[in-house]
Amino acid sequence: MQTLVIQGEIGSKILTLRGQEIMLDRDLAALYGVKPIRLREQVKRNKDRFPQDFMFQLTQKEVDFMVSQNAIPSKQHLGGAMPYVFTEQGIYMLASVLKSPKAIEVNINIIRTFKKLREFSKHYNALAKQIMAVERKSDKQYRELKKALDELIHASQIVDEKVIGFIK
Image: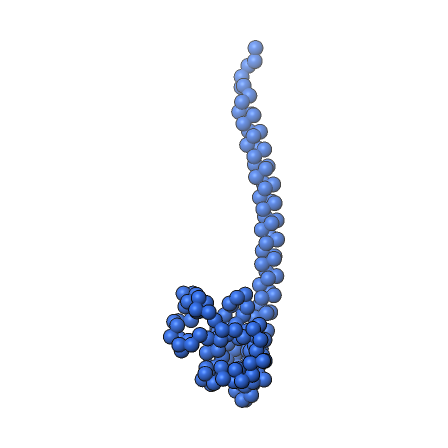
């Protein structure tokens, strides 16, 4: 039961930024049961394990945007420092830096959550393609129906123009 609660927590902490799924250092620290500053210290000690595509620091503009979109409640929520964010690969790399039993359990749950998100994404994309195909088909059927109705209306106007009665 504990695993389901953790996975639900994790899913709500995954955000999309710069076209990538990311998690804030503060949220990861909370999941791991450590202070954010301790997580950052471990990462700084192992900086070569975290290239730019694994981890990056947010800009002020990005923080403002996240607050305006309610992704985070306020700037104070970040603890006064510009947060680091971790991509999926960066989170996997954290497993090699944070080695407590809790960190291992949390990383396993994070990996499972990202896997579920990818599966959902595949199903969503397949459904979107099917909807687009139906819309295209419907558009074609609509055009054909409109053409038939236009022809009927045109034909009825011709009938209306004919003179009714005796012709001399």
